[in-house]
Image (tube, rainbow, N blue to C red; front, top):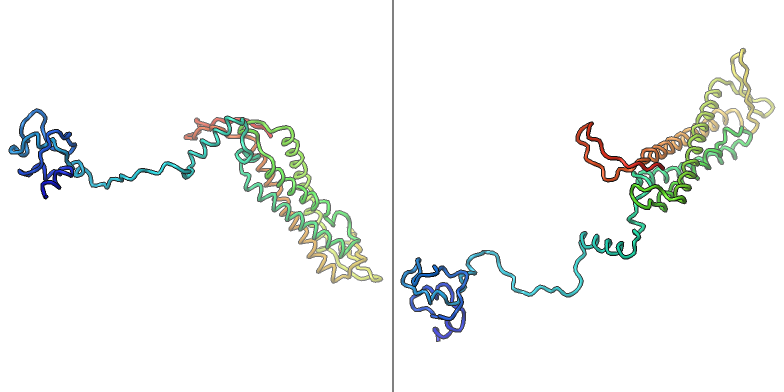
Length: 306
């Protein structure tokens, strides 16, 4: 029974090498059998005939320590998508349709995330300037037009909204290509409003600072329920009446409102200047640029004006 079970299974290395092992002369030569072709006996075991070494053997299993996976791979069903497969799918879609999906088109600006943040801050600061202007107008409607900066808050608010629309809704057709007519027109409009908003903010700061400096040089007195502030200098006489306010309100509340207006407008002007600088720095598109190794080896630049 022991010999019959040995003949029913493939002979192992030890079955081939032991003297009473199985003899299969018709078996194929295994990879793991240690034999020398052309000789009758094994160089390692001279007593073992060559026909015995030609029996099926499991000696090849001793050639590696890595376990072999003999299970059939399941190739049916969907595979897990990889970056290469997704890129290949996009290339197939592009070759069929000839159009690039909008989310893969390049943005208007190189630092578009920073520009979006600046545009959002412009919107918030513009709303703050409009709020402060409304408060000043309600508190003292007799102030001059230049001291109530509606004319700087509204352009700043509009500049932020147009900047968000430009950066979120508009894209380039292709890297290095000029902008389309619609996008170019919208960009010019947005930049024009931004320039107006920046100039208005800095002018509002200048007017508020001049008003504050003049109040510091004046002495306020109440005459017939009207607070009148005059300069102490006899050579230059300046007078500012405040019919809606008392003298303590002029020295405290009005001063605080003017300082707040100057601060918020200054912040808005800085944001607009930074936003315009990002547009100016993105007037060139670096497409397929070389690596800068020294001052002589400069990157290739493809011009993309506006």
